Image (tube, rainbow, N blue to C red):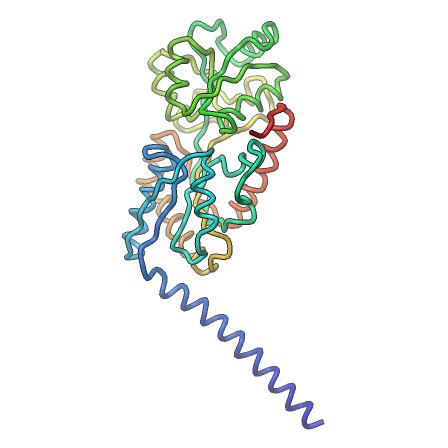
Length: 329
């Protein structure tokens, strides 16, 4: 009996020491981090919205963490080159990735995706949303969404829309509209947004929907006609512009979004610290004012909120791709 009691005491002591070691390990990871420079992988090119935001966050983290935070652009293959590199990096907090909408879309539009968006990344924060603006060439005889839908029904498979490429958010944004409105459009994919916009202004294609901050100047200048925003609610930067949901397609919503993630299994203490720093920065009044002026909407979520959002987006766009008959390339 005494031996059993002794064993119980030994087991209790072992569990206690293990628990203390675990707590001390987490505390050490947080206190000693970072001990060297950090890189943020951006899967888009320099000057893209995600690149600009990543550089703003990098500068802030450099100031707050006391270590250099650099941005590294790794582009190509629908952003998958950058995502794959980040997913396969060491989960030590020294490689982060600036995630965009394609993170939730690629699995539905590409046959071979070298990572699992839900399994291979540790969410840090859903940073911002970028509303899309639906615009047409002024020569197209429509003044609102209902007229565009009516025209498409009278001319099925004739209206051409531009996008930044197969499987991008601007591509699926229109396919979601087509599915919900029960019409057919013709997709004209470009290698990026600018060539598509150039052809739209020239009248080579009839319409497109992409980031509001990108299209708004052309709409205000009369080179394009804006029909509505793709968000569930009207935006602060264009409060008089109706949503597509209130313009004839109830329940419609599509936004481009930006985020910050780390490789899976990055210590939670590091994730929490990065989240606190990024959220605090995004919620600074001057930062929120700048974001709003640029047509962005600050989200600044918790890791859990972003994880739930990413799961929902992945399911949503998989359904859209199937309904639109989009075959993975």
